[in-house]
Image (cartoon, rainbow, N blue to C red):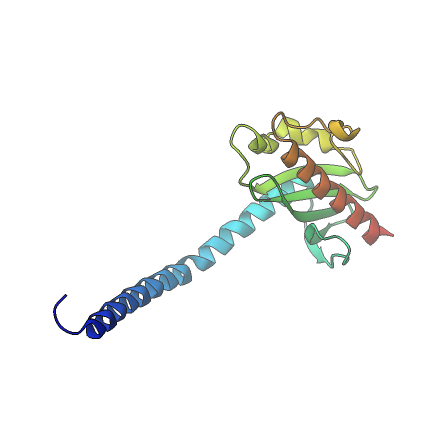
Length: 178
C-alpha cells in the first residue's frame, strides 16, 4: 500500500459500494422480470390444490375469522363446502396446504401446496395414501396422542403440524357455518 492509508480505504470502500449497488440493481431487475411469472405459477398451484380437495365450479373468497391463526385463506366452493389454505410450521420450515371441508364439517381432502420437510421422512406427507386418512374426519390428532391419524415414521413433528392445520381449518369452517 503506497500513499495515504485513508485514501486507500476510501477507494476500497467506494469500489465495494459500486459493486454492491450494481449487484443489487441486477437482483432487483431479475425480481421485477420474474415476479409476475412466479405469482402466476403459485396461483396455478393453489387452484389445482383447491380442485384436488373439493371440486367446485367456482371458489368465492370468504373472510377468515380472527381466531384461526393457521388459516390464511378461505373460499366457499359452491354449496359443497369450503377450501381453507393453511400455513403451519413443520420440522424444517413452513408447510402450505389446502384443506377441503364439506358443509357437514368433514374433511374432503388435503393437498400440500409447498413444504421443505426432510426428504424420505416429512415429505411423505405429500403421499396420497397418507393424506387419504384425513378424508371423512373432523378434528384430528395423530395416533401417538390418542387420535386416529397414523403419524409418519420419523416425522412426528410434520404429522402433528398437518393435523393442527387440518383441525384449525375444520374449526374455521364450523365457525363460518354457524
